[in-house]
Length: 266
Image (cartoon, rainbow, N blue to C red):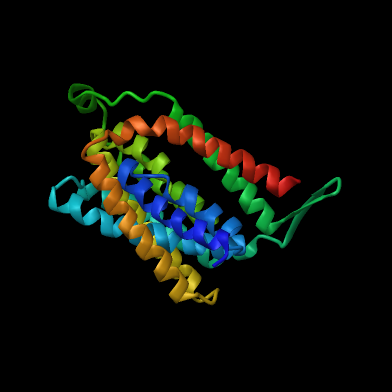
């Protein structure tokens, strides 16, 4: 078996482990794995990323639901707008992007190259956000903040578009919003974000089914390995505080973003 294929399936395990530990970052790993290790077109890769992250997050949410860590109202508001925008983006908007967008010197910015560069910039800033020390609000501070339904709906729509374009679940965006505007503590925010990620990612994938031929055997195999990973991640999370690993993961994805930019430009 080709070494890239072996590394790709090992990467699938780490996609799940990352989701299980810190509640985000799965798509940050899965998209480059699909593109650079399995050699898939970025459009197909983003679709596969949506399914993998969606189904893995869904399975991983079962434990959190049993522990009653999910905020149902927030899931409904955020998922409603996110699901609509991600479906429209995958079904229609992404098909409106021209195959060749621009030419800069000898560099031709194709649709695929644009999406990978956009993805790289997105995860670069996500890495910076993870490195910065975040302070979870105290219960009293959260009570002072207003539960802003409108802002949650708007944020859901924005995250849905981003998810639709590059197949990123957006947990690194969702979690801070839930802490700030849904008055959730970090533990509940991470648990709630997994449910939101699963709903909008799978609905976004539905928008792809009619547009692409899906290799179900490969996709299910990859996703099953990822599901094993999320259980491993959750087990590790019982002994290690996942939030403490975010800084290290932040540096790692900045390196990934830099490598993607260099590869796409040069």
